[in-house]
Image (tube, rainbow, N blue to C red; front, side):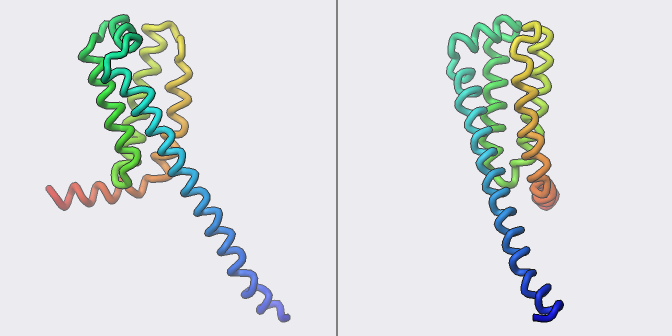
Length: 148
C-alpha cells in the first residue's frame, strides 16, 4: 500500500474515534445537566416551596422570612427546569451560578462559613455547562431579536 493510500485509509478511523468521543462527551454533558437540574428542583427548590421546617428556619435565621424562601425556591425551580431546555441551558447555568455566588456570600456572612463550599462546588459544573452550551446563547438572542 502506498503512503498516500495508507493516510487516506486511516482518516475514517480518526474521524470515527473523534465522533465517538464527541458523542460520549455530549451524553456526559447531558447527564450532568440532568443531575444538576434534579438537584436544584428536588433537593433545593421543593423543600423551600413546600415550606419544609429546616428551610423555614434557615430563612428566618437570615432574616428573609417566607418571601425570600419562596423567591429563592422559585428561582432554583426555574433554573433547574431551564437547564433541560436546549435554548435556555447556557443562560440557566449562568443564572444559577450567580445564585450560587449569592449563596456563598450568605454562607460566609450569616452562617460563619458553614457549608460555604457547597455553592462553590456547584459553580464548577454550572460553568462547564454554560461554556459547553454557549452556542444556545446566540440562538436565544436571535429569537429575542426576531420577536422584538
